[in-house]
Structures are given as C-alpha cells and as structure tokens.
Image (cartoon, rainbow, N blue to C red; front, top):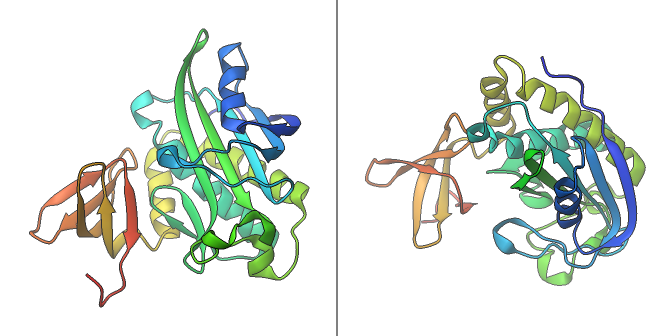
Length: 253
C-alpha cells in the first residue's frame, strides 16, 4: 500500500492558472502533494485547450503535484481517480448524487459541476503528474452562455457552500482514492468504482468527437488504462483515449 497522501497547500490570491503554477513548482523540485489553491485564475485551462471561467471566489480552483508510484502507462487512471474523489466529496459535503461523464467531468442533472485537467511533465526529479480540479461553487461562476450545460453547488442545493469544507473534503477523498489506486489491485478497483459511479460506462448511446472524425456508438465499459470502449453502429469495438463524448437521447441519432 502506498504511503498516506499528505497535501501541502499553497494559497494564492490570483494566478494565471493553478495547473501552470503547479508545473512551474514541480520543475523546480516541488514534492508530491503540493496543492496550489487560488481565489481567482486569469487564464484558467480546461481539457482540449479550452479556457475555464474562474471568477474570484466563485469556484474552487486547485492543482496537485503528483509523483505516482505506478507505471506511466497507467497514469491516465489519475483522471478517473480525481473524478471519483470529487464525487465522494460532493456526496459528503452537499448530499448530492453526482454522475461522471467520461473521462472526468462531474455532473449533476446532466450539467457540468466540475472539470478536471490532468497533465504529465518531465522534471529534474523525474516525471510528474499535475491534476487540476475546478468546482463551480456559486452561480456567478458561470457566464450566461454556459448555464444550459453547466451548474454550481449553489444552484443545485440552494445555498452557498463552505469553500474550505469543500476543499478539505476533496483533498481527503483524493488521498483515499489515490492510495487505493497505488495498491495491489488498485487499477481494477478504480475502474470498477468509476463504472459504478457513471451512467456513461455501459449501454449509453453517445456521439464521439475525435480530432478528425465524429461517430455514434454505444458505450461498453473501460479499458485497463481508463480509455472508453465503444461499439460502433457496424459492430466494431473502438477504444477512445482522447476526445469528447456526448450522450444522445434514446430517440436521437
């Protein structure tokens, strides 16, 4: 079993991006567990080079420096681990019932509540993983253009959450999930738990958007590295490791 995860929090008023700051810190020797937390990001980043809206005190913006004791070919499982941790924390703090959209968006009522960005970098001390987590805490986190597809804890529960409590529970849950991931059957356990926590894991009709093509398929669980298995309309099993997956309604094509 891996040693218990003990985060060290570095708090900032404002930063370009907590992930960028975590990368800078990792490259100058930051140890595993450094957690960058900012009240505001001026250039927040999401998956696929998207921007992440980060108004002051409207969301929880944090990034972790990790140096996992597992083979790098299994590092994609960190995204699943992180999504499970956020889901755990939302259950504990807010009594919510989150869903996880592959690979790592945490949703409530089919609207995105949390996004996760995992990156791998080289440092003088060896490779490191940076995991960024952004949770929409308050209504003002979301510009009008995103309100159809995203939500916040305040909107779902009707009250403003305690930011420090959410932070504390996310880090506690992440530590638990991260220790499990690095245990003897951690990969299988993490994939099993993810599938149990996601309506996207099996039998979900989806549209898959890759860099150069888009197709519809039905989900067939996860591969050992956390990639999504889908069955196309002509019966082929394809493995999706990057791209967007959007649920289709039963009658839609």
